[in-house]
Length: 299
Image (tube, rainbow, N blue to C red; front, side):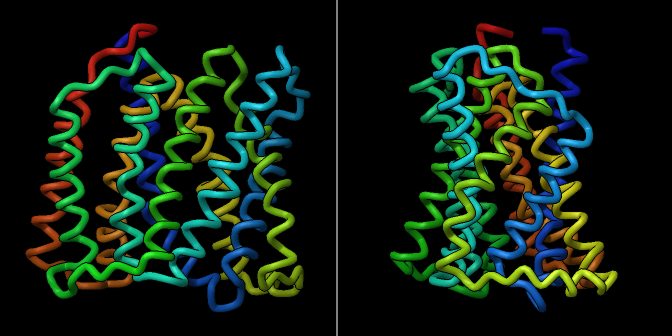
């Protein structure tokens, strides 16, 4: 694979996590008027509509088994991941969820080794994982709290990390069949939204479109729908296609780092020495993890 294409893949992964690391600000604003399930459905409906406008050509499935992969990707990467993460936050500390969900790259590595035999790992990947998680712990707790287990919420957070890893592996597999990335993302969103609908009957959901008259709320839901969902899922899927599921997933270590930076720049929160140390450890771990993976055979 040409180095320029590889570089583009890494830049897309970096861009994606940079955006995803700032979404908490928009979500925090929207939570004043919307429930988590409302935010989730509206953002993906907007994202799906945007992708249909960009590319409305029908996706022609080459084999019936491929359709099942799309169904699994929609359920895991859209429906289950976000629902589990949001529900986990109602049972346990946000700091717990942040640390546990950050194990997604490790879960991806394990699943990639099992299902994508071309994604081999070296010891450096696991050393980098430990260093990054230690850094994320420092960022999440900032030296002020101890880690308290809350089994129901913590297990849900761990399952969220596993299903995201499963999503990344599925996208890598789907991409290998030659489908166009925007069409892949659109089809995945369709199934994600479809399987999200039953949850509306069990969770606090209202359509009430009058809330979008507020320009601040409208701007934030559009940011989540158009940028964080439509655009970023496309760039993430492209990155997975180009550099692999495992290498792309290690960039998720940067999400809490971006969140800290956004807190300082947007919310004017103070950064502590512990946060700086945690950031350095995350970056060190990311570099080690990235180097601790051998080149894929199909590269």
